[in-house]
Length: 321
Length: 287
Image (cartoon, rainbow over the protein chains, first blue to last red):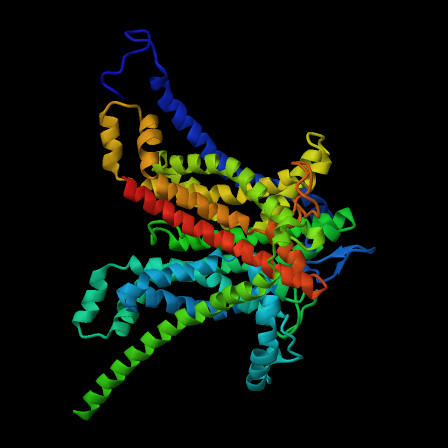
């Protein structure tokens, strides 16, 4: 490799410097592979700890909707998977339009002097710990939902089965709103990067044809960046699915499948958070760990899909988000 | 003629409307943040007294929670920073091949694993190791297990941020260093890493802020404790866990204290964010 490198035994003795290079490369490679090995280790350990439940309950775990910790022991995951899907869908419903609005404003429409401070402030949303959102959800958002927002929604859309019942403010609807707030920084930051990655001649071409700023964005920019935006949304979904504390504190924690968004519910994460330390039977603990495994596999699939969508669209990852 | 005028007017109105709508989205997203900071300040300040910091959580203070969080953060940083930065060095300096791309992909995916799953992992790891007798089963609920969980969250995060930081260093810097005849590893450790240190530090601080606010993985590892810190093999209290317990507490004095603890936690996060900005500025000035 090096034309003047001495062969061993000739000239100066081998110094630490000639050994240092391969050693350091070997060492850092080993550490990096070890970090990926951690992902394998997580999967293996969770599967091991859940094997009691996997063996005993089999597929019934994924199709059952009863969680009975006293004999006869039955554990089913359906209500929690349902709650996770409903709250995540709500989060996307509310979060995606707002996030896209933010991304478009920050990358296309905003006056330049406003761009950096606003970007920074929106990022601060991601810096607030989940448990603080939960506290705010219990004492500020919950009452507002119960007194003002949910009754109004019910007045307008009350004929729909999803808005029936007594609005109490600690329900799937409130949890969905909290989740929307929490995924906004992720979706807006990643889709903003997707928009910034659109080459300027896309914009110039549209503008030179006389398009307005919005028409330029719609025709020239949004279309071009749609794969990246889609990836950003899926990434947000991944966050919503795994979010624990804020949901646990606002969803009301009732193990039941109900159509109405104004009913209390339970997600996979909130059920684990509430019951992990109260598990009395080893099989229940094992079932809760299997629930964690299910959550992890859901999140892995969602995130691998998102990364593949984002692929080369973004030069680098979303960092802090 | 009139038709044409109408259409252009409509287009201009639509442009204005979409501008306003996009701006409203920004405002809409900032309302929760503003409300949260306002409520935390107003409600939190009421509970902040000197004894709030010196009493333990058993007596309505948060002294042991702050202590526990600082210990957890310090121990996690000691483990996660070297491992994370080394992984970042591999990704930036040696990872320009298929293996590197695969490692980067999975490290990216790892940053998104739900934190509660990581908590279950740390719990199960000690449980399984305990079953084989390598470690004591008692260790399941301990500071050590909490640090394992938090490190698992922080390592992939720091790996990616330090990779980004190292990539900011121009290739010419590496070439100049190598041209002086120093070996590559020295060029990386003595030239490339120091010249990107401010960005590496920023990433590290963001990682610390992230694990400092985690609650879910501590629920089944550190648990919580009414006492001052008692050692690596004992449960330990932390600020986020205190907020959770106080928020669900039965009386309003506890709820009040939850706001106080939140204010402290949010201020710690903001301080970290500001410090990281100042570090970046100082470094760039001194060079």
